[in-house]
Length: 638
Image (cartoon, rainbow, N blue to C red; front, top):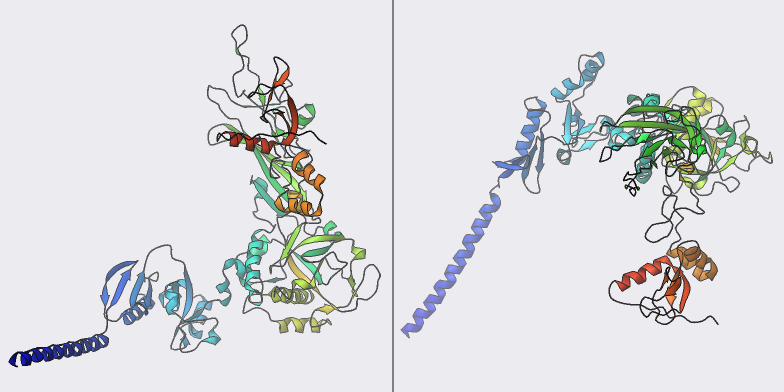
């Protein structure tokens, strides 16, 4: 009995110890929860130590920076989720200035503003005083930034210096971006880079690979503050078009536009393309080198006297020559690629090779300027700049500053265009379906602003969040006796009848883009073929054919036009005639010594010429390289 009692006592002591351990762990957990964990402090990504209060440390460092006791380029970020402080001083960070707000009040007080206006304070002074603060992407996570001073609440820490700068440089140049959808702003920015204008004032002395110059660039009637600050008024890249929004004669469906031909005759959208061609007198191993000269008839590859008609005595084309097609710009001869056979007397006969620089096929223009200089290698280098006028034509691309791109669908004479009761004829007619789904209300606002600008004789401000409003434009239009919504009655130019509804019409700044149909137009009837497959080459630069792909093939199969398929994929592509043995089905060859066709496998002379694609012949050759010998079984036609 005594043994049993001791066993039960042991069990009881085990239970007591377990409960004691549980109580102790609960107490330690409570202690841990009440204890504050130190914040890790990182400087430029490297752990430097720990601090008992990371948020207070970050606030103290910012205070020191605003007191100019810490460099203004230092940024501090406290991550409350991970309880970490990140201090950044490294280079390469993108930082943006903001006005500091404390306890719901801006540090940029009226007194400070007056001192700035008087010139007593500069931007650097404002930064040192802690009025302006530069934040990087990390520290912005700890800031609550108001768009304007009027929106400040006690929770805000900063507000924007200029609210339009949230868009970036390119989109801040566009008028009313806040009224457009985000994808259209992105499109407008990319198309602004493609617009033709005056890219450099010294373009006459430059030899860029390809450049475009607009003849008559204009200032936009509606611009922004940043547009003026960047001096873009003197580097304009567009013109003010009078734009009417309506469907007209079916030629402006989708993104098509109807353009006034007489406006183009007066210079609307006209530009020129400057393209540079260059060639070098290269030095070859063995002391041989190219020579710039007028090639003579004994040169291998001589192109005929007509091709060299614009060359001067030195072998270089003279300025202001009108060149077309494949006219030679710089005559050049090169040494032969391989040494020719030694003659009877043991003298190597070298024939020069024609390697002149010529204009690309399909291009035309006038020789603008010629430069003879020296390449980095020390060889003689010749650069030819060709000037080509680019008059707007059907297929050329235009775009407003709101991502409303379109191509010319019809050039219409002025007398056939609609006109207002004042005799105003639009330069461009835009399809109304381009507006609702794309949500480019900024385009409509610019039209109103352009109209008010023309009537009021002043440039309008389209800066985001702070520019002229719709009400400002309505007031100007009303004062000048126009409809406040920008609508007018128009009359059909062909019938003379009054249109059934008023049309929205006004000036809009349009850009001509460098996607010109004359540079993209491509046609081929015959031309070079690839060396391996004997199929036509690919691409406009190589005078290639137009691709007839799988989908086009499937369309013709579905339609049943089998002879058209044969013509496209065989006759006009890589048709070849191969000799096939009737006995064994292998390829045969023509023995020129015995003047007969022979099968190399079975020796049979029963050979038939067979039409096939050269690509198929190559396929059979590749299969044979794997020791698989396909045979072509021939049957007589019924």
